[in-house]
Image (tube, rainbow, N blue to C red; front, side, top):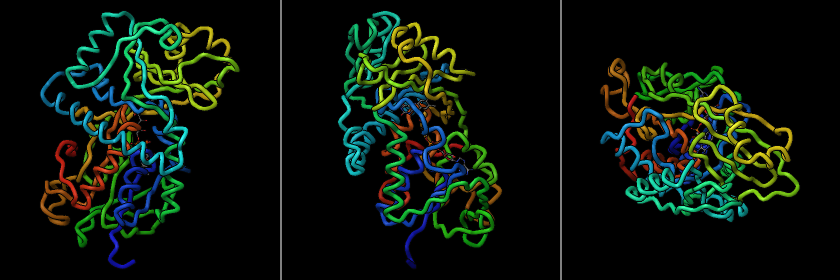
Amino acid sequence: MPGTRTAVIIGAGLIGLSTADSLSRRGVEVTVLDARPGPVRGTSFSNSGMIHPSQARSWSPSRSSTRAQCDAESAVRELATESMPLLLSRMEELGLDEMRARPRGCYQIFPDLDAARAVQTQLASDGITANVVIDPGRTFSRPALFFPDDRSGDARAYGCALEAELARRGVTFIYGADDVRMRWDSEAGRVAVSLAGHRFRADDVVICTGERSAETLAPLGLGARISPVRGWAVDFDLPETHDLPPVPVMDSVSRSALTVFADRFRLSGTWDEDSARPLLERWAELIPDVLSAAGQARAVWSGLRPVSDAGRPYIGAAPIPADRGDTAGEPGTPSRLWVNIGHGHMGWTLCAGAGELLAAMMVGEREDGRFAYGG
Ligand SMILES: Cc1cc2nc3c(=O)[nH]c(=O)nc-3n(C[C@H](O)[C@H](O)[C@H](O)COP(=O)(O)OP(=O)(O)OC[C@H]3O[C@@H](n4cnc5c(N)ncnc54)[C@H](O)[C@@H]3O)c2cc1C
């Protein structure tokens, strides 16, 4: 329709899909391009499924307690809190009633009670509720914190359902788009996107390329301080009889989790290990009987978390780079190139809120400097 605002989104992971959703609700005509053959095939494919505002803090071993780091963590906490009701209402609209009705909460187990209490005290000062528990069945007799405000759900199932709904609403998806070209357009003063010689009509271009964001932005003269941090996921069939906890159990030692989904359970996480072996060895210590009853793994997967140096995602307009001022506007001023990148270990938790925030900024409903782009 002439006059309708148009946007091209690069990336059909949880973040790109959520951004497409929020833009299309605002009447923007959206096209989503992804290099892979379908939606949610990147890092969003097989994550731990935890919607966990409780973990809205840096997982990096080099975490500092500088003012900037504290501000970043509190911004992520706020966004996680905004995202939760939105994500639940999206699940309801998509008819994902079982996912929405999953029992609330997540556990995190610790080597000893003192370690659990220390984290509880730290979280309380950030306003996060965590109760100390030792439940032989659910926490494998380990001291644990229970986070009653966390939730869980199958992120891939959600992403696929959202993509199908967006397609019904008129969003265009192009997969196998592994040679997307972008350049600053001197006449239009914005970014031109083309694929196999076809140029897209796009008032706005949105980068949701997860761990590949630095390489995606480089041809435009922009950087992205995002490091890919590998994690693993190993799926098993549920043993015929089992007593596994219905909510995820995180292990503070290995930064991994056990999550039960409808027909399988998943061990997933770890921080930048080369193989799934440390993950499996750790859970063999924690639940030896379950693992021997489960037998062969059904699937082994690894993905790269897009971890930003700033300890928070970048959500907002990218600035016009210094050497493009003559063509696209004043260097350093916001352009109509937008980013929604760097969600680290929190992308499933933040997706609905991050998509909504960026869409609101793009149409001028909201201004927000908390997640300003820092290439
Ligand atoms: C083991 C593991 C467990 C996790 N557990 C949780 C959890 O319990 N809770 C939670 O909140 N988060 C969790 N996460 C983090 C979460 O999965 C990520 O933050 C999230 O998936 C990132 O989504 P994304 O859309 O930014 O990236 P992706 O899902 O990677 O999507 C990016 C897409 O962009 C496409 N793309 C990239 N570059 C280009 C290009 N140049 N051209 C075309 N297409 C391109 C890719 O093909 C990909 O499909 C976990 C991550 C891992 C690895």
